[in-house]
Image (cartoon, chains in turn orange, yellow):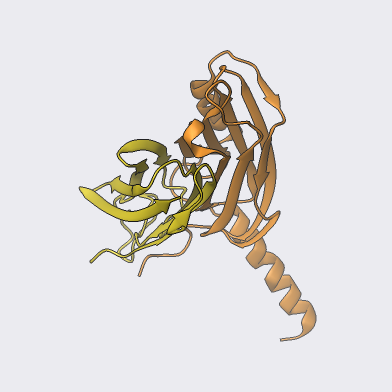
Length: 151
Length: 106
């Protein structure tokens, strides 16, 4: 195969990877907004205090390391009581929710997630005083999760 | 057979913040994937992971199918007293696993 044909083939392969849906249904930015509204209600969500660490370019969407850290003294008077993470293009908008308290000392949670497509990830933290803070990150995924058949 | 890996310090200074990391073997089958016969494989995930320190809840995580297979979680806790850290995973198909580790606080 010459170089030109190889590149054309690679381009088609990339398109197929990004176009194939992950399962029958897919969340949308609207579904993510609805999932977020379920958590925050009518309260305002401000950007800041939260940092969302995950690689900007992911080769394998099946396992993507993610760390959410929130600035907080984590004292009885002022702590982060919950962290929620959402996505916009997996089949469901929820990724995880954690409940925290002063006993954690640091409002930091790490895990590994699946990404069905290139998309935006949003993390929202709720303070003990009922305020919401958020951060978002865009991730490009070259090999999406859940496309392969199970063996 | 269940395999769990837990990484946490065995000793800690009173009042210090320790990191607890846990990994459990589990397929985290999403319920959105067709199997070899073309039918959707039923969902089988861990839904909840909780941690206690001497029986007091310190961490509570709700998981979704978007958590990668063999879920890994890391979090922090203030070491206030010697005792036992308990970790518990529950999920679909009656999945329940509990593990305990000891920590000495000086």
